[in-house]
Length: 399
Image 1 (cartoon, one colour):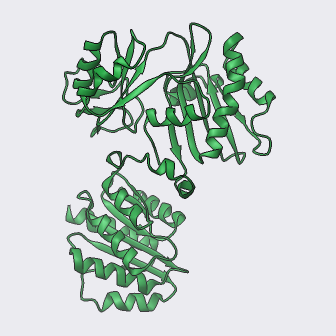
Image 2 (tube, one colour):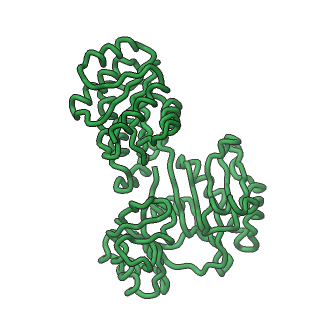
Image 3 (cartoon, helix red, strand yellow):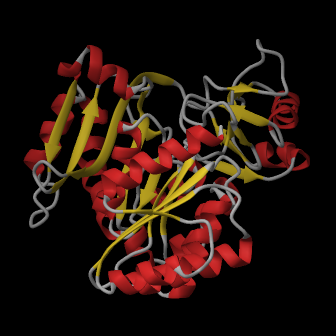
């Protein structure tokens, strides 16, 4: 689960991280009053969407040379003008894709005198099985570009969960970021704070880009991007309350109601599979035969008929889907339950596109019998390779 920048900063501030004062607004009419609550005379008006690259982004409704989604304002009039231009408009960034995201809220923040921009993130480093800091002196830039062109400028420091951030860990991070004086003292305090927030709130990613050294030598968190482990949200109702469903795909929202693992993709073949590994293999083989999956969908090992029906409805609600592949290996999941769920959904929503079903495992013969006797136009497949070939051929033939 993702949250907005201003929400992330509020969480970090609770732990003692240095962040600027700011006010979130939802209407341009609130802009002037919000700015008056801040010291000024420089304010930063920031679009709040779940995507990076906001400053370099462009609004669809504005001229190509218009400013992006993060703007400096040197007067109250500028604050209001920028708020009116940004709210309700569609911001396109490198991370939103060409469709962009509508800006429904802004964050008006007190400005800062920036001396240096740094990069810092915390994530789980699966290569060592530990949380790790990833830091660079090249803050404010696309970290992927830094990794590609100057990888020596990225330093990774894994943290032992039994000890947390030690003084030696913090010192190593300060050295990597070339911090001195007051900034170094701030870093020695800040790094354990950020790690504590990451662990206690079950974050999957904490990214600060940039972390700045101000002209007075102090550190400040200038931007913050936070993602949380969805499997741990039951422990954090205060975090769940921050969820902004307007930033999420409607199909993914519906899937979450049924505890389905669903991610919308850009292809045209819908997939319904049980097991994440099998789902990945299914998407891979679809690509192998020259097509693209429209989604990742894992119905889980013990899905009910109702859950399968809901999954099928979600797939068919995507107008980009031109064919559907159901690939089930029945262990805990019984093939007859899958068959009944698929047929119930087909009868309820109709079948407008080719459907290929591959079943294997528990009660497979019963499942195949249910489908064969349904009278519906369902294409049976013997194995995954056969299923992929058939759905790709069916979709291309219908194109």
